[in-house]
Length: 313
Ligand SMILES: [Zn+2]
Image (cartoon, rainbow, N blue to C red; front, side, top):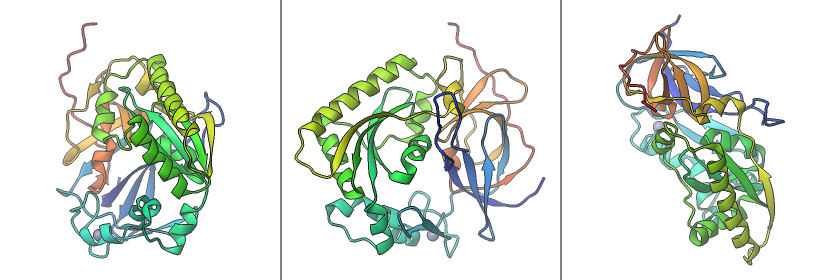
């Protein structure tokens, strides 16, 4: 047990993709930064116990990203360890962050050489459906084709196009939003809420297949060059499976902005944990993205078990 204080960067799925539907993949971690700026990756694999205490009120800046090439990024720590005022960043780091610029590139925005190299590589357009049936269109770079969807916490997803670069893929993305009405963003709290009562697997798959079909029909009629339509399923990590089953689960009742928490990770989809608390059979859905930019210490803590009413059906 140690009382090292860590700034939480979030849940990352950086490992290799699944080779087959039954296999597991991704090697999900909670990325932590010590006061010295060193990074530590805490595994969130099956059966892991995660215990922590939130030791500072509020959120602190996570720094900013410099895109160096097609596959490498450099993380620059916040010089002033300032409170986060723009989501997870201070004003200065928000302005300096290069990952923000990539969203304006296809509208003629200026980019650095490293970001240009990143954007000029192959990109994929996907359609992802979440636990409640909400469906979005999105993009992933070649090297993060699988990981991007794992981090999003998709329930079902299909790749619908392979584009020659990040400019074409974002033109297609905007086209899909305008023509088919698919959103480009699903809030993390909405994903968590949907996991309390996920749709049956066949319904989610039907919703996703229909949306992907609509997108392919739209793309078949577009005059945009530089892409190929594809039909390819994304393979969900086995570690997410139990969150999409029909077993009862409850909303985690304790806010993550304070207090002591500890549980076993029974399953993980994106940043949402199916958590097993000590002393109860009830399972809870914990949204670890609520922990991003907060300061914690790790330890043998246990979440207080709330009184829950099992559903009667
Ligand atoms: Zn900052």
